[in-house]
Length: 159
Image (tube, rainbow, N blue to C red; front, side):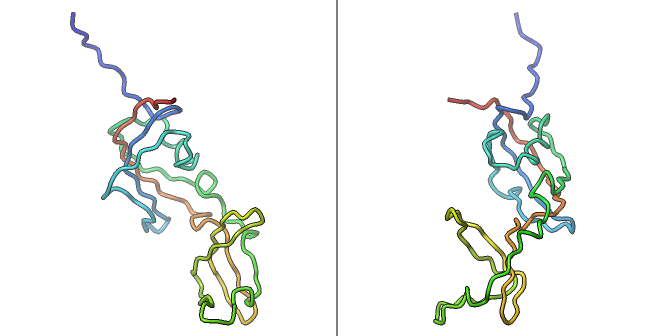
């Protein structure tokens, strides 16, 4: 006897392994990340590779699906928090030698917090005495257009 019924495709959800192509674009259409022209990404739902809001937006999709999703700041990289902009004395950056940092808006610097965790910050403003550094994620506060093409979905193998 031949089994003629097909099994339903595996859909994205908890305990699934997903392979996909994706792109992230800002409100103005500028692409900030994409792997459509390269190697696809593979992750297991819940492994921390994707932010929860991006991951849950994929639930229910299966191999072959292509969608464009809008991810708001609350589900994406968070709202822009003005409290994450800190003011430093310009002297904190000047050592008085050839290794002085050339401060300019847009410069990304690495700081260590009280627990010595690395914290990236972007210089946003400089005046005669102070440097303003933004510690928000660069994509915080943005509506992200998340385009995906699901290549494969399979049950995750857990050990």
